[in-house]
Image (cartoon, rainbow, N blue to C red; front, side):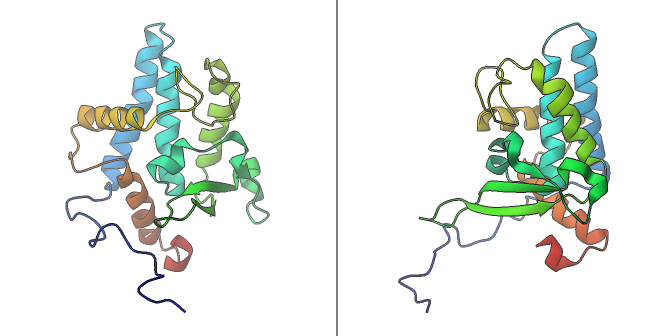
Length: 199
């Protein structure tokens, strides 16, 4: 039985701030296009900074493709992908195991599996893992997203890079990293997926 004294309490009364929202599809396309253009721009100058730029572009696309929160994204490991017997065309990237999901207060992180729904996702992830990531200084770590200085990218880097790309495109400052997750949910429902599947 659940009583007031043993029920999990939410830290906030409200479920979200009204000004926070999902990307529109044109906004999301502009954001991803800018991330891709940044890779080409930096690489065209012959600088090694194109590796982190590529990482950031792939990371943002992956966060959207699986509806991930910021910490869930940064805590992914190379071994978190797997096959989906009903999606053989997706190869080794048919499912994603999220091991560091949002926890209720006082509980350990929740785990969940997320199915790959967009056919462009496996190519993005595979290119990062097989062709680009090996050039990163900390590529020997198991983290999917190593940083330039350590085994795993930090929260501050995610926030600053996201804000820089958003501002460079001239998008609404209300858009934040979590807007990628909101967009995943919104776009799947708009595309006609079963709300229970999306949940």
